[in-house]
Image (cartoon, rainbow, N blue to C red; front, top):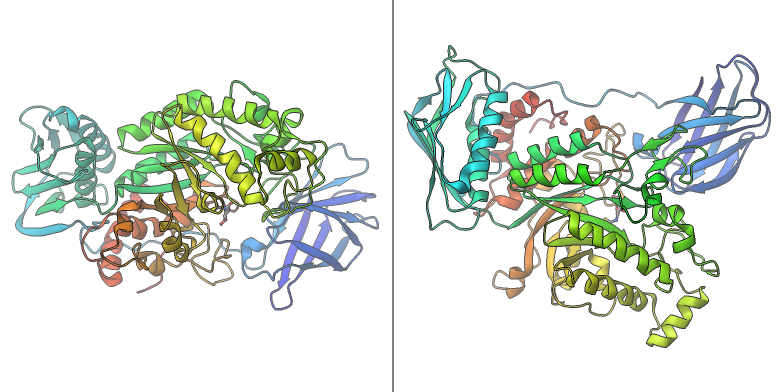
Length: 632
Ligand code: TNX
């Protein structure tokens, strides 16, 4: 075992590393593999040489032996100073002469504390988030009794009733029954807005009404928030529902959450749990980021290499360790059966699944898995992607590229029943393609002069392929940087809310995912110990709640019609566990859901915080490792 102590010099952008050899015996020729989110410029001092950095993976070579119990120190100059703990080394290992296996290195940061919250108890207010359109508290309580009985409702309510029953059973120590005399009743009624519902709790009865399945699910979600947060039983006086009349419908039809499963793999169980947490907040789209430079996570029967090679990182693997992964082979992928499970679970919760296969950039895992098909051997282009790769872009001039994407998209279209397929299109690095004779010839033949035009040529092909299979293409905002694609395109604003008015000038539909309000991989405060990226600043809870999705758009602008909705994003460079996932998402996701759902004037932050205090015990019960909000 070795240890690596890291201490940053935040002001001058230097990072001091102290490697200590606790092994029995000296290490002769050794190399330290260490994953760092920041770029390393040079070694300022110490007896090590920087051999290379690929993505986050840095390779440092020791220039002298490291004796038993010996230490060596070096200072690295970084491109940007370390401002928080997650910019320090995330994982490391050593490879040394005479050892057939890599040697584990424990990384120590200054003052590391476990993340997560000490818990506040509920003050007894119902934690209704998102706040409904209309709420009228009525006198009295509905006592819940020993046995909760749900009456069978119309077919539209079947899934909602099952979800409600299962969730109440988990939430309470009561028996759940289903029969005609049930106190909880579902009734079909016309005249609601899409996905709208009404809920009436009176002493002796609970009535949920809607005209569609989504509305019944949302009514059930509201009822779950009215139930006591901690497990009680029939002897408890608090075992009751407050009487209330609620009428509600969403502001946007699209209320999403994107999860990056490429940078770190998230097991199916973690996703199923997340879907459940989403449904409780009335979110209805799960955007599944399945491929990226650091991993390919979807089984493709036409090309098994994609997951045999592209789903795994480790020392000696085609993909080197990145971020929190070390020398051992780690990763994973979703089989077709896994995908069906996720899609079916989502469907039961009224959630649509949007698969994303990122192309033409962010494709390093695929290219390394299928080099014969996807590498252009004569390409002399020089580029470096934002994540520091120089080999991560598919070539629009190779026949193999089209064989690959068509086979992949065909499987995706059959596996995912929804109407949308997201194809990325983001972050095509400057300088790509121009040094490839094949790309040059294609550009000449098609009369193209700019990289953006070549990208559009490629994406148009992809879009036609999807349209022929009945799907609508989605892409990140960069899909609008070139000439127009075919009609029906849906583009996602991500760099900032400021780009939205410009995007709306094009004839496309738009989903908002602006970094400053919805990137939950970004840190929640400036505190050094608060994990997260910060390329777009910090994203504190209050900022999320204060998001105005229509800012910059005049109230009467017809372009508002083309705002489909909004989406939060959890990129996973720094998210390798369920605990970290919870910590980054909660409670920010509750504030986000309120903005995406609530159709009236936005409730104040103070009002939201009061309800949040009552909602947190629900998260406690569900075992969510949320970040404790600062005192208001
Ligand atoms: C930007 S959003 C990216 C991702 C990163 C993320 C980190 C987008 C289209 N690209 O590849 O993971 O920032 O915050």
